[in-house]
Length: 224
Image (cartoon, rainbow, N blue to C red):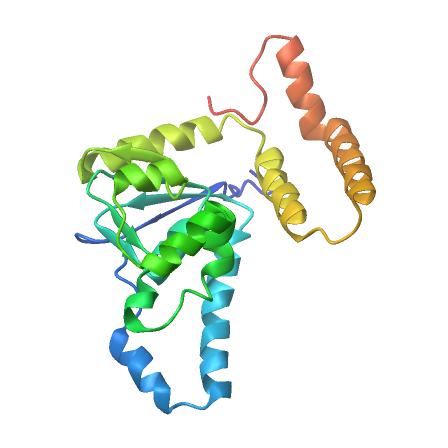
């Protein structure tokens, strides 16, 4: 909690209502967009990119509880999350190619999650993949047998995350984003990590975590 007693937001769980997580964009809307100007279509895509980028870069630990299908933009949402728990019947697809378009707006986020070769293959195939392949390729992290098991699996994960320093969780995301976006030299990157480590060790949270370990007690951020 902050100095006023208000609780901090530490995690976000994204889930879908009903049988499916997200079947993708409205096809009628995308077809009608053919009548728009290039500028109008670009502005619409920019709004969508803000959604994906905000989720990708959100400082909280983000979790997906996914069932049914996650197609097109739905698969893009999955790719933006930190940890994804899915049911065994999950089907994911970069399905845009079946419609003669491409997963360009979601591309940077899916690419970072899957890597170059896997992203290219799935974008070219545009076919659905099941839980086994999604787990193998790193699209998801965990599989449960049925929807009823999602809540327990997610709660177990959140309980674990809450034992980690709140700032450490957020700054782990910052660390990764800086690795993603780094454009300076390798030497500069290594120097930056030294400064980052020094700052964390000297922080109140870092000192509390190290001291609590040596004193064999719970850190002050851990739930009672």
